[in-house]
Length: 126
Image (cartoon, rainbow, N blue to C red; front, top):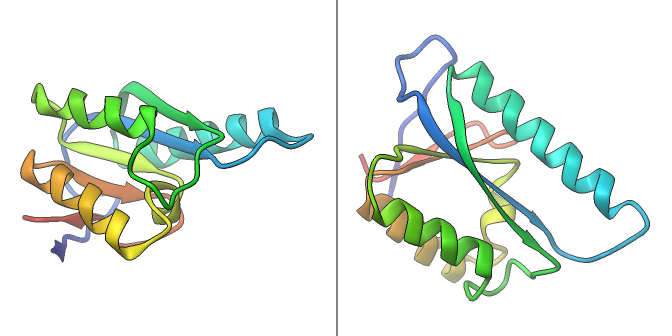
């Protein structure tokens, strides 16, 4: 796995998807979800990306890859046409190296670059 660094001025694909994960319910769960969505949308806009679809896992741990939202996302990218997935942080994708590698392998197999709001280097196989 290698990483490509894109800056806001770099030419990047315009079509993107978003992935949001909120691990557990709390008093501020809804605000956490809305904050993540706003942060991801802002990051996408800074790259000139248009979020065409959002995938959410609510109440799921990042230690497993068996999550309905991530499964739907991986099915969706299998259809083609998506080149970028924007997340708040890489820890939202997965909380273990094994789970992260598994998901990244699938993203990379479909030519999808992972861009994080908090982490500065997008992850890509290209």
